[in-house]
Image (cartoon, rainbow, N blue to C red):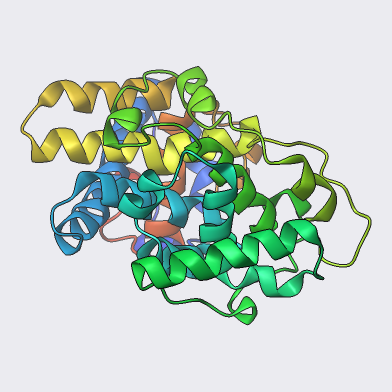
Length: 309
């Protein structure tokens, strides 16, 4: 017998996600179907965001991939400046100059303004000269180092290290939309971002310190986030736009191959004994947490509707 709750009770407990305590009232088959619908809802929302970028990028899928890559790689700390950098240094420019890692670092680190943080040595001097050359060649603008958040508690997310890793991923590769569309598993995503940052940046990424990076490439955790928030939604958006339903299957299959997320949005569900088996289902729980519980949208919530009187 299901225990029914009033809308007032649901709203009162929404922000603390009190519904988690009542999930066991539902049949497992019903809860699974609800999660699938929520995961698809979240994927659809991300698809709309990508199509918006696609439309504003002259309907260029390579540039859309490029902007989304920078945005997701920036994470919560540096999403805004990374997105701005993606518009300053286009996919076209990076692909024209990707035969040299120095060229890529000069473009990314120079235009980001982050080079200004580093004391002059032979390597920094060379990057600055190359940046000046490309700035004149392509009419590029430069950002200020002050636009970046350098105080992340996770040193692996330092923007200089991330840009050095990105340069390595782009080096001598045709980094186009087809690179993303060809990913079918979490391993494929990991291999796509397998470039290792130049040795110089492993020892110098934090200015004026002796701190060394513990890993030269994008790790598995970040790779999984790129699969969840970049590659799968991009595949889904591309398939929807090109009217090819097979891509929708590939997007879902990729999410099902990635480990479930464990973060502040999913923790209350884990604490209640609900453990999603993969990222497709953890995305459903995040959709519930962010779009319904935190906003107290109990009237529209598909879970609340099953628990309501």
